[in-house]
View (tube, rainbow, N blue to C red):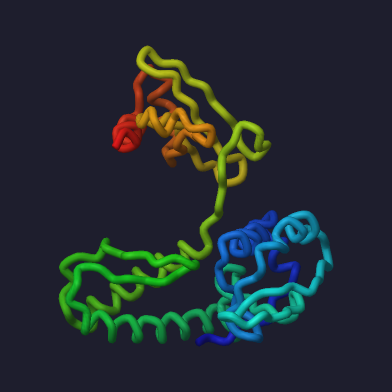
Length: 247
């Protein structure tokens, strides 16, 4: 495993606090943290307190978690490592450490790919098991396996550093657009932070829609879908999502 630098609280507050949100999301979903005491899952009972106090300069605290069935007490931030989801690239100069780690990672995956006969590759990343099935008909030689390994590396890095957003009308970080068309009344959301777009789709399963906990679907889309709606055209991804929800 690559060696990472110690985490500093200021690392999480950079980039408008995006990494702080990643930290809190890991607590919420029960994903393990890389620490000096091993991979630790923090106790979710601390989440509300952390959400209300962590976004302050110089924050430090004692946190509790588990390593298997063993209870662990951690000092934040001194017991935590600056792992990749918090911008860590390993101890070294500039990108050299990242390149060394990438080279090592490639070799490990190349070895597995040489032995792999299935048309997919199963990964455990960001607390989830992901089946990568986007690499087909790879020639079983060193050059092809090196390229496949690099593709997997960038997928894992992008997945672990993704920005979590949940559009709602009440959230000031989002703009809501109501677009009436001849066929449907469409609702779009745009993030002011990332400029990503979502399209709201009602569930076609009426039994589910009648439940008290019902929430419409939010489907990622493009600004071009919004422009099509302005031209009185229902986007294809709205139609596809609605059909899938009827099943």
